[in-house]
Image (cartoon, rainbow, N blue to C red; front, side, top):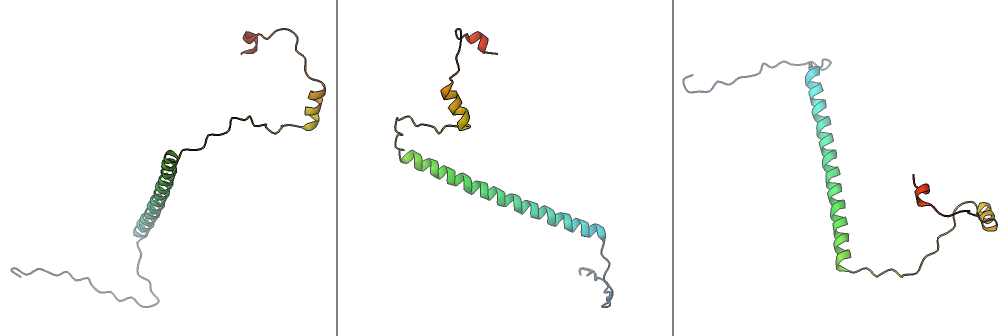
Length: 110
């Protein structure tokens, strides 16, 4: 064995069909942890890719808006739909509140 390499051979152990090879629970746990970490990393990369696609779409829309000027909105005042209970609105219309005295901004602010 002057210059030759030594080959290490594993001792072969034949396992009968009914017998299962020994499984080290720590190794199995490490494999499960590694698989979980890989799955989480894959999910993270997918989320990042989705966020990147969304960002590019929004930037594209923004660039299109800069290139194409938007038509100016008309200066008309739009009437808003009335809110609240119609009975209360009718009461306030028929009996408007009355105020006595002058408006004092110092008293109104807290």
